[in-house]
Image (cartoon, rainbow, N blue to C red; front, side, top):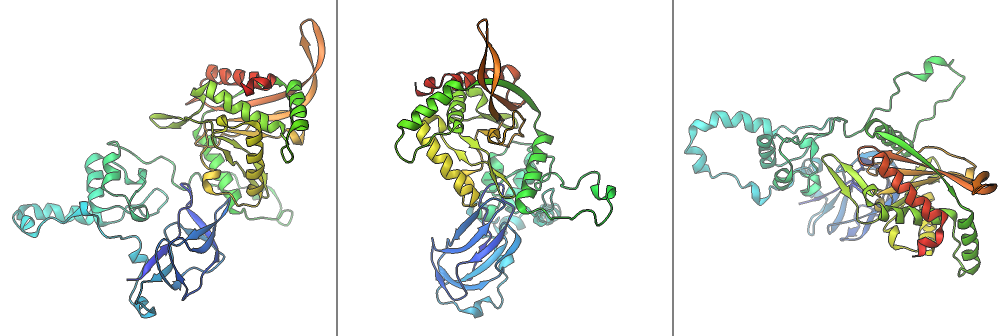
Amino acid sequence: MPIPVTMPALSPTMEEGTLAKWSVKEGDKVGPGDVIAEIETDKATMEVEAVDEGTVGQLLVDEGTEGVPVNKVIAVLLEEGEDKSALDNFDPEAASPAPKKAAEEKPEPKEKKEAKPEEKPAAKPAAKKEEAAPEKPDGKRIFASPLAKRIAEDKGIDLAALSGSGPRGRIVKKDVEEAKPGTKAAAASAGGPSLTPSVDPRAFFEKGTYEEVPMDKMRKTIAKRLTQSKQEIPHYYLTVDCEIDELLRVRKELNERAPEGVKLSVNDFLIRAAALALKKVPEVNASFAGDNLLMHKHANVGIAVAIEGGLITPIINKADEKGLAAISNESKDLAARARDRKLKPQEYEGGSFSISNLGMYGIKNFTAVINPPQSAILAVGAGEKRAVVKGDELVAATMMTCTMSCDHRVIDGALGARFLDAFKGFVEFPATMLM
């Protein structure tokens, strides 16, 4: 039987992608691990590998096609011994979302059903209702096994709130049994908030005085996610000034002594300081998860990188366990591949904290929007000479303003202040980062 090949979900948040390029043609033989296509998401281009063995029978989506939904059939493989005639009566869309029933869904014996004829009238309408595919708030179909639907109905669980672990994301018995009774889908649709403004700006300008430029996928994703962040996360802000003269002195000395190829930046010190502060004040290193908080065991620090058309935040995982040189090399590598859109989703999704540094542009201070599922982001301004009081004297010092945006559901004011105090301590006395 022909094997459908579907558009893969390359990350937990991916809903659609662009089929940039086919690496195979009809008639080619492929096996597990062979690269068959290149897929573009809003922030990266990734190679897709075959998971089955066979011959490419048909390519259903043309190169360059945008907006291909996850799980849509994009190609069909022929099994050994099959030729193109096997495709004559084969419906790939029907074959894809309906995998064979698992053993858990064994049909009730016919004799047992006939032994209770009085149950048939009540059972039939319910069965029809279960067979009708439910939909998510955004109109997308939900694929779930009949048994999973029955259990969900009994437990009062909204299937739209669950992620399926079965073939092609199908919701199965295990997924429903592990969900809490009464689980409901989030109020916002899976597609996120609307991008249509409440007031159309075109109403205020004469036609011909402006040019409409369609937003690309990255710009749409940024608009959607950050609008959702400001709507759902109760932001508040804490600001602290850090003196960085000692940090600049240590940086200069280390760079003079560093091996060839290693050049530490101020940002490398800030990443290290933030990571150590997260270990010192671990309550900040958390994510909001409804009735629970996810307390992260490592400081996975994201660094905002400006790229053409937007920005991306690659993550330095376990930054608390890495020295300045390792952080420097990794951040440079991530930033370079981010600009080339060669990052893997696991390299820019998730994380437990972020730093956005606009100091190189001369920005003194600013506030940043939290990037879910994180609970805080630190906005770093430029270092500049200011008059400060030391003892009884007025002296010049290089000061840097840092403003942390906090999710009040996770981080209270006093907790955020404790974190910034720890961060400031590491920045102003960089030798403590080596202890």
